[in-house]
Image 1 (cartoon, rainbow, N blue to C red):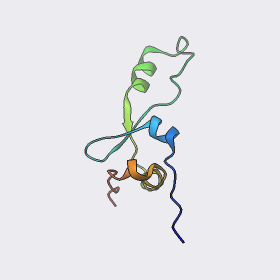
Image 2 (spheres, rainbow, N blue to C red):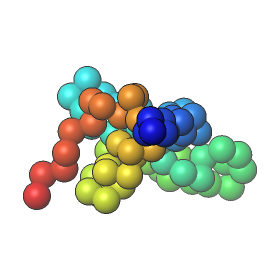
Image 3 (cartoon, one colour):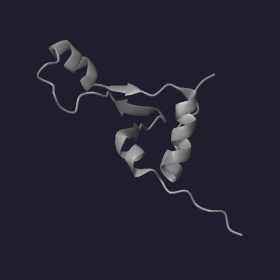
Image 4 (spheres, one colour):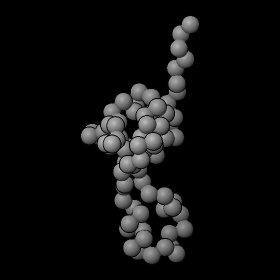
Length: 77
């Protein structure tokens, strides 16, 4: 019997970017709407991208992204 193929999780693919060097970069949460009541410093801090450093998440993302996750580097021990 042939092994079942896993589908790529498209929602994760939209929320995460894989850099050329193999890092997972994601946008900060909580900046979709209701920005009037947030301070300027808070908005500036949350508008930037941050690297996903958790080893367990990297492993899970690689599995969920299938062929799109091939370039993800393993986290340093």
